[in-house]
Image (cartoon, rainbow over all chains, first blue to last red; front, top):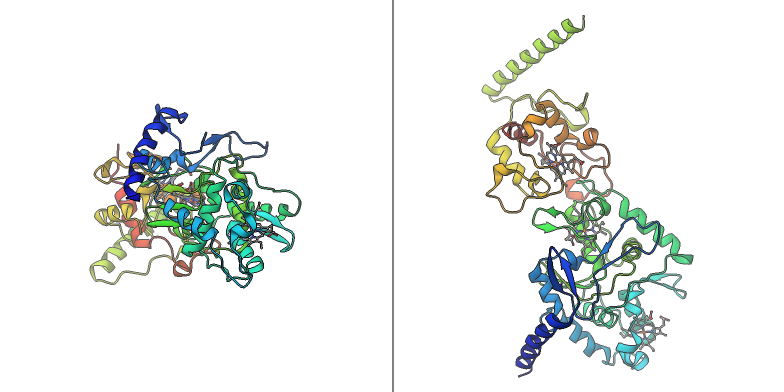
Length: 284
Length: 161
């Protein structure tokens, strides 16, 4: 019954989207943008930005993949968002609290948080990304166990929280205490690694828009994460994607949740500064 | 003086080739040159890495194989039109034998950086352990073996005008 309802709403949604959502001209074809997103292309805000146009990964995907992301009822990642919504008000841990005990209505309290991560955490003396902040709240505020990296719960909560910030332009702090982390991330981004001897920049800066065998290279932007991938048959974290790219060039990847990937996350977020958050995106 | 020297070298090279072909016939192939001993002079490596000529059919296989050269990931090649998905990162390799000599092609494959400069995205296929964080299973290994490089060179030589 519920499913049938969704299908009807979904069909309606598509019709409306086609009429109302501003079109983006790609290859002469006007395409509907993902729900809640006004643009997938912005101009760099700082002079020393290495790119002259900043494009969401959505821009580079096939029309079929784009269509799946256009509509929340079709987007397979919403299974995780719905699960995250349930967990939001689930009481757990010795403090007898749920996320909503402190943060109330996520659509209000989390309306920007997903666009500003990683963020400096004074108590920890280091930046935290969304996954780490969620776990920090679980262990320190709820007195519950941390969720494992890439567990269904952590992915679901990350997707749910970041989805509340959809449409909000990515804006991370890179100065002050964040500066050394930014520099470290930049260093990792430009360092060649692996038997194939490539850096992130080799593919995502030099050749975006071009075909690398069956894949069309994007700028490696992060505004869509966590992302549903056909290849994974599920939703996955940004760090999992970083790991995959490093493995493809036959390098020993850093660990998910490591300081190195955190620094890289900060730096890559800055490369997409201004792009609207699209989470959860759909990718090939 | 110089030309005599060259002639001497040529004679030496053909003797070498003769020795190799005899060796090959007898089933005793000399060990291929180690990656660290290969010298690139004037963007060329004239001598075969194995001492023998490569095999064109095998070269085709390494050219398209995703776990081998995976050249198609970055290069278009009309000779392989039946293969899906040709990359667009590097130039098309149509007619490449008309643009480069055998020695130049070998050098490009062995160490693309020595030919195109350090910034190139093209991997070096016969160099070992020069990079950072090389995954354990690829440590001390080249992407292609000396035989495979020779096979690919032999195949590239068939891509004439």
